[in-house]
Amino acid sequence: MEMSEEVLIDSSWVKVAGYYSIWDTHSVNPYRVDGRSYRDSLKLKLTDLPRQRYAKMPLVTTPITSGFAFRGYRWHYGMDLDLETGDSVKSAFDGVVRINAWDGGGYGNYILVRHYNGLETIYGHLSKSLVKVGTFVKAGQLIGYGGSTGRSTGSHLHYEVRYQGNPINPALMYNFPEYKLRKDSFTITSQLFNYYSRALQHRGSSSHGQPSRARQVVTHKVRSGDTLSEVAERYGVRVSTLKKLNPGVKTLQPGRKLRVK
Image (tube, rainbow, N blue to C red; front, side, top):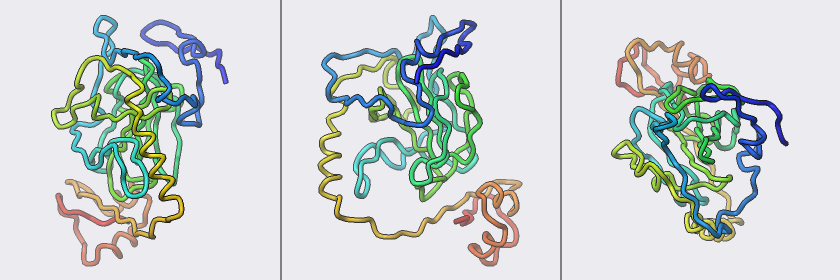
């Protein structure tokens, strides 16, 4: 669907239909372009200082808990970064929010932001999102709070980088341990998506098997001033549930882990 609306970006009105050629507020990948088919390389600017377009890390710290690779019986298309529920999640670059939605079997509460350079970033498993579809956000702007919603076994940020719907290994763009971009530019080539063949082969060989049932355990690290009622409200559970899962707990001590699911 083409849109005729315009958005105000850096004091200039930009026509959405022209700037964002495909604008879909529901589908993560409406483009249907196989990255392996790219014939030419394309160099993207990640920062553009003369135009005051910067890059920011999505979290205050970025410890990796799961990478861009096979995980269990399927490919994991992003980078999992450790956080505590309620931690601030920020936009990596300037852009416009294309999706703000709920995916119970995957991302949970998630936001997708479309950026100037053609990249899109996804922020998954949020406890709360703060920006609506169509909102222009700046790099480093608070867009939500981390959590463990959707298909998740503990609080973390599922962070994806995509180009025309094709997931890119974020570790090729970021040095997460050193908390920075590897370069101020990034080159898109077909080789970036060679993992598709392995992912599809693995999915085909695993199509007859089903994962075994597993119990989801979610914990919360108590902070100073936390109360049982506040923690219960944050995770959408009852105080009685917290007491049942944590027998003997009467007062919350900072630093202690409290089971919430």
